[in-house]
Length: 233
Image (cartoon, rainbow, N blue to C red; front, side, top):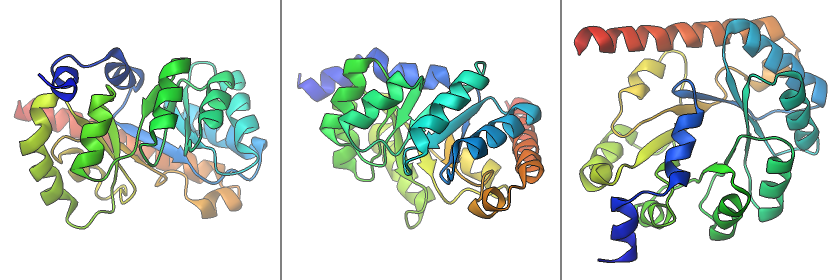
């Protein structure tokens, strides 16, 4: 038995742990972070709407402080750090209180750093080779670009090849309120990530109530999705 086969038959706790952290099958991404106060306003809007989780990307100098502030002021919220590109950022995210980390790719050094510090981690993949390499490292949950051409057909093909491994995918990008429920039905999809709740223009214009409204509508869509599934079960 190869090392990859052994990993697939006995998934590591790291892969399972990420799925246990999320409370809903959506991962709202705060990609635009002009300052710490903006992140706090968004988190407050989420809390009022009942949305319990957020990913704060490390794409600006304000990101680490914003992460720490949200963790401090909203202790019941599941807060993660996204766009982690280096081992140093992984360490910074963990020390800042992040409960999970996300990366756009599958850099082996970044994955190793996440395992070393005990940070639940969602590596990014796009190809079968990348999926297998991440599986070999024990990451059952993986992020995939949601804007790939003909994503439904690609995911259906991946299901045939990898469903037996326990692979769970989180498409990032391309999701809107209009296609949210439809995308949750796609093969292997465990959750959806994106910034449809936090568009850059609303943050720039400080329209926190509008963000809260998008959060509420998203939650209702997810509830309706689960209800339809129960009825159809």
